[in-house]
Length: 343
Image (cartoon, rainbow, N blue to C red):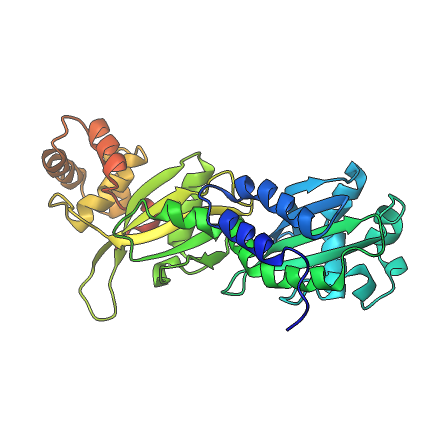
């Protein structure tokens, strides 16, 4: 076993304690960085969270750098450097002296860090157990003797704990627990990609590019922080019916490229509403007139009026406006893009 730095057990216990704290990652980062200072006497430190869609880094915490240096460290050019160094992979921590290319050939070091007085440093990649690249920690010192080889290697042992402490999925999983009967779910990104949601399976309706995700994104674009609606769905071995879709906007504390949690659950009590009535409710929510509905559905206006009368009765609503409001509040409607309208 490699030699351990002084107070290694104490430092590990403190990192483990911080990792177990509730709250957001941003709340844990200052304490983590204070503990790491006892291991590496840094004069500059930064903890990044990765935006893989823009190939850029966001800041979770930093100290000791001028703004131009921070701007470069957040940039896609710096991400390109990290790829060159192999720091986009789950690998042991790397000091400047360990770099596979001369530091003078690295823009971050030659143009920003060394002129600022830094003489050594260490980078630690942060990966989740399921292989997600979460971010990066860099600690820079003003003396070439620090960090020691022992401190560098010990940071590698701490990396899984630190990764857990800053993993944004922790907050997102807590958010998803609002829907107690959720059966499947994904995290929707701003670019329209989906990420697995720990603890829940995926679902055919939540695949990238699906209409369900388009409807979810459109609601968020209109300012909805929480929406629920029904989606027609027929499982491979079952009868045609509906599943409930719940969309929860991600909290502001998670990386900006993560947009929302999208969950599926059983449809629940439909108040006796038929497939056609649920589709008409979706048109009511959109503010459509009877004439427009009739043209859309290729049925007579009196048939639309009869459906609406049944809807008002089943929702105990005295008007179509109130029926639309109750449908939105209860998630008892099929959005127009999801309606299976047969022409």
